[in-house]
Length: 418
Image (cartoon, rainbow, N blue to C red; front, side, top):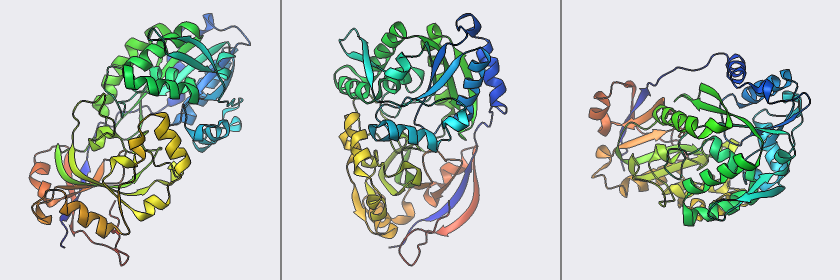
């Protein structure tokens, strides 16, 4: 069959970002009056998550150094639910991948999967907290604030989730995700976090918001009593800053790579317009009839959770799947649909041909196709000529190059233009 003619596009976003992160963190922490709350020698457990947060090593090191200036003895704890294969060694390795090591931070990294129940929510859900966090005199909660991939609310992914899922480790994550089925994700994490604030010694929160280029745009230090209010405000900014595909409807979406380093769901559901869990989501846009994913990212280390969001994948993607962490992640979240293996083809040509033929497009020339590298990188992408009229009407889109008809290598795989 003939394939669509395509264009390379440039999409422009707001470039505002922080140029000197340590200075910004020093300024934010100075506002909190920590000197009045920390005694010399106090220990502080500093949370470090598993997401690919921009500048995360620099952010955590700056927090550590500011705490040390105030006479505290900080240490870093992995706070990532069941990630890293739900083992202490695996979670330590995740941090090492992001450049967070004892040598780079200059403080201990204390990793454990052991937790203690500190209370229960008003629904009777038991609340668990990392033992290394509980043994500290204080806990500093750090996280990026952004739209969640599985539910909608005025609090989604951020400090509240870190206090619940992050500090709850695998034990907490299992309990909370099961409770989500009955009570809803929003209700569970907000109620769990409230118990954590009441029962644990939260010193402060540090909320981070990124711009559409994954640059650190906002860093805000927050006292525990203000976390709920401030997180709601920062989520609004994060939602408006999220890079998106600039079309509401399409026939075929091609994604070069998916992975846990890109999104907790492998692909950001807010970008692709599709989720495996319909329990707590409003209708999403864009709406693509077919999603074809070509590969796993190297950084996901075989974790293919979220592959069930796709309709079609390649054999090379399937052969890279490490089923143990994939299944642990999917089962813990209760979204086993996220680990389903889609229709699989040996070559891109076969996969894309099937995607187009089953998309509802009248022919390949009429196929509204978008091709992206991943759901984090949307400043440049490829689109079919069928979208040209819409492209002309969008001020933030610019045609960089007419690439002609899609072409393939001798092995039948797409020639990479991204």
